[in-house]
Image (cartoon, rainbow, N blue to C red; front, side):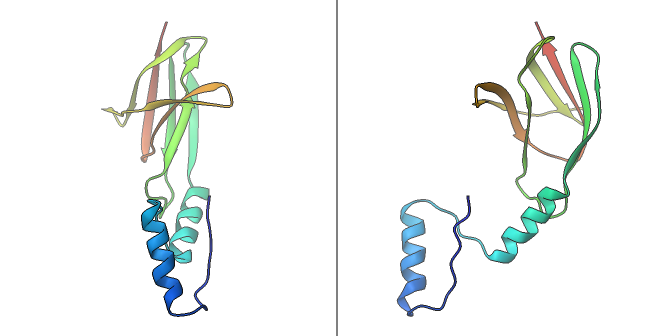
Length: 120
């Protein structure tokens, strides 16, 4: 989520805001940083999906400015459970997260061609 504020309060407001964020380990970014990231995320996409029963191949395009973008794919398919993931032939680490009762593999998105291999 995003919490927005503007700086038109007393001189102590900025210090209080920074102290509060630091105490709660909350990152602070500018509105411009947020808009750049959102534009990059919105320009990001998956493409060219193919499925052969055990491998899901697809391309990933990460939009400019979408730093630290994560993607997710199903962790389980009729072909089995995700056993490996590569982008441009290099192994990619992933974590498994359950979201609304479904299991997903979550990984850092990168430009290139991905192959997810599922094993029974």
